[in-house]
Length: 134
Image: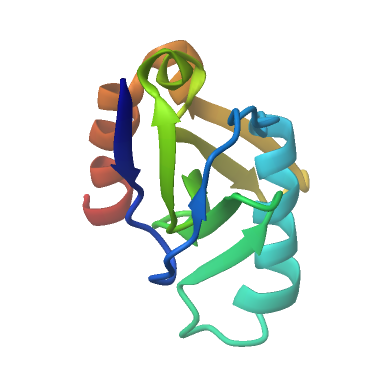
């Protein structure tokens, strides 16, 4: 059975593909590098820029944002596309990954607070709202 899957994400585009979808997914260490790049190159030069998108692969982007008190968020998002795939291929797809980091400006170090792989997506969003909005 063939099904149609629509990913809503960055930019609306219509790409119809029929192939086995196998993605290398970023881990928290790779997402931390994007957060560091955002903090050093984009956030400090433009304080109103509250987010940074960086392509990780052909179909995956990493979103870096910041909260309060040196808290930063990284999310893996699938690019906005339409795929046609067999249902059994969907078992291996990961639709979301997220990490929350804290920057210690005194020691110039980073600490991982939440990893959606280890703690779950619900915990990530609860902590995201807590650190973003108080």
